[in-house]
Length: 314
Image (spheres, rainbow, N blue to C red):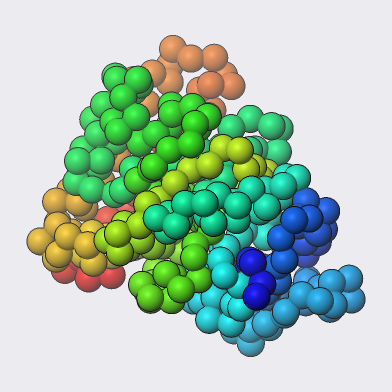
């Protein structure tokens, strides 16, 4: 039986997908694996590249653009491996990463989701462990509690957590998560109701509810070219992020939680705009421009909520 099925969703990222596939081949020597690429209606020749350079890869070509979870589910349903991994196409796999992750899972059958250390292209650490969304977390973010108490991971949403020790964690970022294949089938795969964003806390929470651990494993590592700052988020991406956040609250806490969640997001946006506006005149030009970009982001958050239907049903 194949040890690992690797699900990769690609949308017009041909060159990075090429590098990702090549890195898997170079970095994975001890286990057997299959790669399933779901090409999400790309127009840059990604599918043709895969057929030409990686003929052993299973290629699924969409005739329309689908969301993150729906795309991965196409691959996960076809997976023949004992374990299944969702992997971003803009990643580079470090030597032994998947070998190490499979070895860990074999030795720890109580683990239901496993994530590696994730690095930025310059070698710096990229946050990949997060706190499950909750009203408490929104309050922490709205009132800068993480900045006031940076040494408390739960208040700072693990932003300052060193990511240097094997640990059971709240949830893992979706750039790379490995699951036992029978478990991901049993819990219903990824929730396709999340077009993008919030699908990773959702699936990790369902793993925990199934009685399995969610674990961060720093001895396995990848590089991720994504993970840009929220200040550069497009309007489309912002819409998906906020829509998914409120859908997460509705799904896991009930409809009653949506109005207070929205109120805390609005309060947080107003607080950030106020504080940034007070700080900007006292900063250097470079820092001033960066803070203006962040202030603009929170202004767009406010505008989104003003336009959002009052029912909260998104």
